[in-house]
Amino acid sequence: GIQVEQSPPDLILQEGANSTLRCNFSDSVNNLQWFHQNPWGQLINLFYIPSGTKQNGRLSATTVATERYSLLYISSSQTTDSGVYFCAVDPSAGGNNRLAFGKGNQVVVIP
Amino acid sequence: SAVISQKPSRDICQRGTSLTIQCQVDSQVTMMFWYRQQPGQSLTLIATANQGSEATYESGFVIDKFPISRPNLTFSTLTVSNMSPEDSSIYLCSVRLISYNEQFFGPGTRLTVL
Image (cartoon, rainbow over all chains, first blue to last red):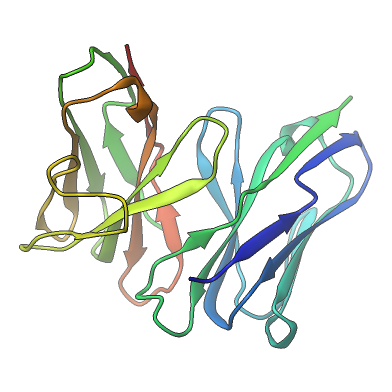
């Protein structure tokens, strides 16, 4: 099946700092999503971004489908940004509309 | 988006017992899924819940252990049968809406098996 690799696995940020999270995938996809799992376990949809660039407040994401990677940018980080960020993809071929998840980026923002 | 509710939100169960988790969506959906997240791990797909027919299970998951029902477009249940401490996880319902390719997740059911 498709492989999804996220880096870095762990990240500690000072409040106000910027960061970039990366997601590499091994095959072409027709769906790519970024989620934030807060400390209570809730998965929050951040971006649906199989290609191109999107921005939502302090967060933005870029997917370069031809090179099989996606980036999530966090600017001016806040303590509420802490949690795990997951990249999930649905392969174009044989995916059967099933999302495959990476192992996540654990982010801790300290005041 | 969709409003997805799950019941119960958490439970503590004895080994050997079974627990049924309910998932209700406020919109018409095309697909419903059940995921498991073991402590400190990523999400793993258990099965796709099919309306009016048997669920489609992923490798490593079987119907006898995780029976699933989906009687209509907006409701599904997952049962965790004959539980052991290794079943302690968060179980999440997920849906895709009609006309959308984006997937949404419920709040999860946090299960602890003693």
